Length: 196
Image 1: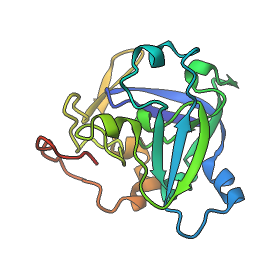
Image 2: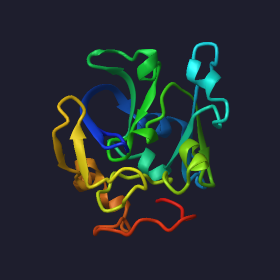
Image 3: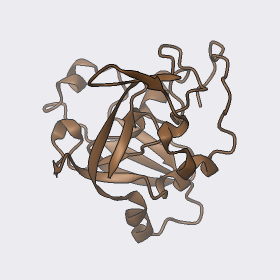
Image 4: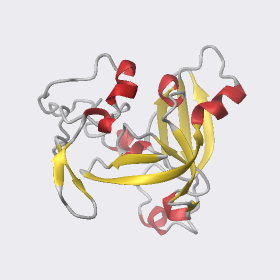
């Protein structure tokens, strides 16, 4: 699948992933009726990950979460390859999450554990900076980020700028999941607020 990928730092690129919809895996395990969220945990291997060794203040291992309806959406992918080749470690081998309508940090890499939960799981960046990184984290030009304006994106290779489309251009597929998503420009969060 060729997906548009958008980083919260404003850069964007198109990426050809190979893999399968996450829903196929979830349907096989038959989530309990009270499951509402999916938590993803990444590998923790400090001996192979110099950044983990040098940034010990972060809440390793990396962890992310989705609502169950987001995880079951046909566009949510478990990727095993990119550019026609198996994933390399730096790209998230052996399997990574790809959620094309959310900022890139929601797409956990090198997943070693998937857990269904009743309660909304904590996530890596929202634990560190709740004012900047919310649980939903949909690409939305109307929701400002404290450090990077989100209404304009730029291509990673050319730096050419373009207007950021809501839901990263996947609105016609996913907008029904978010009836409360802001459709008009919002004010920046007040200090101490929690991002969406």
